[in-house]
Image (cartoon, rainbow, N blue to C red; front, side, top):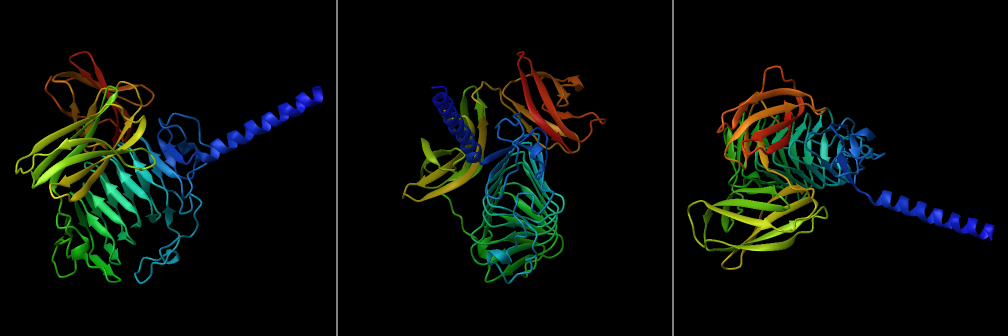
Length: 426
């Protein structure tokens, strides 16, 4: 009987152990841990969505998804930091243009950079084939080439700096809704890549076409490129394409706010022509969008119109929202994607911009008419600045002795409520 019980216990232990292994290996979403660090350092990563969990014990591999949280930076410190060695466009079948050097950091899984998070590479070329989303207030700093084979979405009020070349390959989509800096050239390879958005790019070199590319048709007509001397293509020092992305509506902004246990979406249109309705769609980390509501349009309008939608039962954790615009004749177009993180707890809303803070000047938006003070603390809780302000103040200056780094900003409202946000000071 003792032998039987021992044998049964051993079987149960093995089953439990195998279940633990299965759970561990099923986890494919890595979150930056604390203030982050090098990609190849296991201490930079956790499986906890709040970034405060234990060390993951491994680093994200090429096919894993990555989320860089607010207040964290992840530095791509080696070309093979994710286990992918010696990858180049030539090995993927892209030839005929002069950016085929090996030893590029190559990521297939999706990367999301949240507000206040930073993805950077101090040395290595970066090549991505999944979705790379830089949320509002996020930062992408590449001190080399960046090659896009998937979708790059850079949202409003975020930072995109590429010191060398921006290269667009395959069926890639590059959507930039903020202002960006490219140190050298823009390469368009083949006839499929598209460059669109509501922002603008300043480049230090030229626009270069390869393998049948036509920049005039593959760069949208709403997108402006400014060149330090000559953009090439016989256009002088500015370039605007003729790519047509005609939408039933012209969207100015699309924002999300966590209000208590709900998520509120707001968007503004500048123009509507024969427009019928918006479908609000939502997705989790699986990126499978499903409709969650319908908002009727104005039909025809040439003035700004504010819309809002409240998600009464939001997803816990990371969620993505997008707008599907449907015209009266049935034509549909998708607008930009935004993301929001909801931890299931009551939250007060605050927006800080720009974030990262540059030149020590920042503004805040808070859902309260009057405020009393702002306080700046380091991540250990030590108070570095604490000053009273005028009730209507919304623009502030950091003291001169505040060094570059990550801090907690606390705004004290006249109602007694406090609002906090992680900020990055450059």
